[in-house]
Length: 212
Length: 100
Figure 1 (spheres, each protein chain N blue to C red):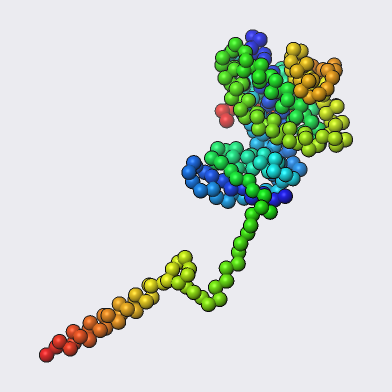
Figure 2: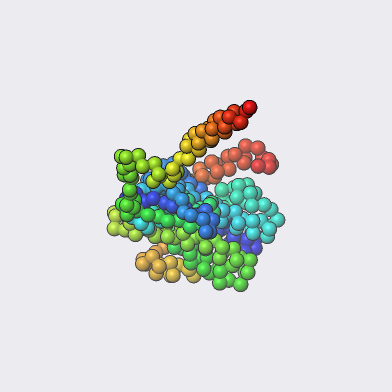
């Protein structure tokens, strides 16, 4: 697999799995208004995953659906941050805020890259991510100083560093105002991802080869 | 706080009331209104207004039933009908008077 396809899959898997995790709040978010907003953000992330899978699928001679649903859990390249299942609003916002901050740096690097196609897609995604960042920042500002939120950021910080390559981590630490620590790197998956995968692919696996 | 949201569907059209939402401050209200009323490209623009900032007016007494003041105007329909009937019967009478 080319380095480009590997990178595309890593980002696409991050967006798909995070979109899935965020969508677990649909119907039970802290308020009706937040429920609608967070579900919409989750849908956006999955839309970004689809666009990235489509680019990768062309390089790999396959389809976006096959990439999203037909790989084994261990073949996913997502960062451990997005896999965690923490159905607790403090953790959810801590992850959302840390991920969006990291994702902004990652998208900026792609926009500035020499890959015109990927730079174009990254710029489009970033125009939607602006609103995710606004949403994340607004919540982070509101929860800052709350013990549960601060504890969640402490817990997730090593995972957030693992979203970016080594050369992006200093900028993330600066942005978030924290010291770099040992990151939780991509590559190892949690049991939580396997459970998510079982659920996420269950419909597709129920009739192999069907066109949906 | 409750915020009222007004939505403009196309450029140049009037803003119409879309709904209300409860939010802790204007920033949350904007973010939530954006996701609720703009994410499907259904809006050109939104106005997000704190309900408390709206001066509501709903008392319009008309004790003397001054119908000629009302927007639906002074109803001429019934009066015209009567006048037409009067004219018709007057015409019929005068026609009869012409008979030899």
